[in-house]
Length: 210
Image (cartoon, rainbow, N blue to C red; front, top):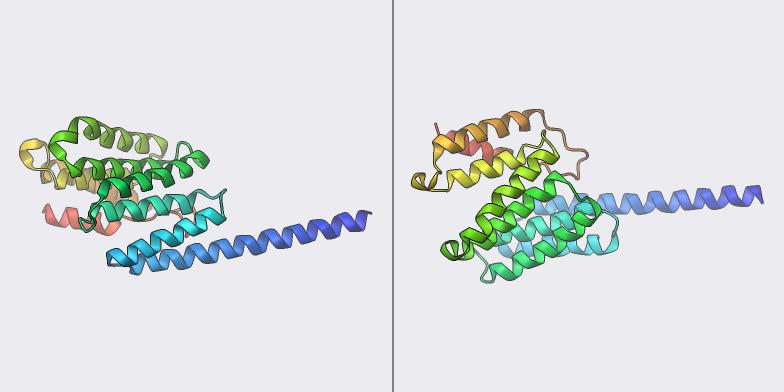
């Protein structure tokens, strides 16, 4: 009986390792595809691939996160017609990620980006609803992980793209971009699958604000 338990334990461990390797390989290849994607069609295919991984790996938050992130990028690209519908899809995926990681800084960052996407559909009509949410999620992201550079990058990017008369411009954006870059230089993602985006754009903000 003892030998039987040992055999069962070994088989269970082997299956778990195989499943873990399959997940890692699927995520790695899809992240590579994401990095190479340039068109709306390519990004849509990447989002669908992350969605399939998420459906297969229901206890992993990262596939849900990347599904939401890619769909949010599509919303902000200016190349899709129904931004609201895509933003809603991103929110559904991100809510699933948040059910597994309730106070994750990276998730708050994407929530802020989704709020931005919602607002730009009709800035005049929606600013009062989504403007505060954009900043609230950024502050939550900072509070959840003080080493995460992305809240500062997002904040700098928002200000760099906001007219000076509305509180934007380089004078306000550059200090935040410099803080983001400082954090990027010391930031180490938890694994090769974890979020590690934004540094190059941060450097461009600083360069443009010289």
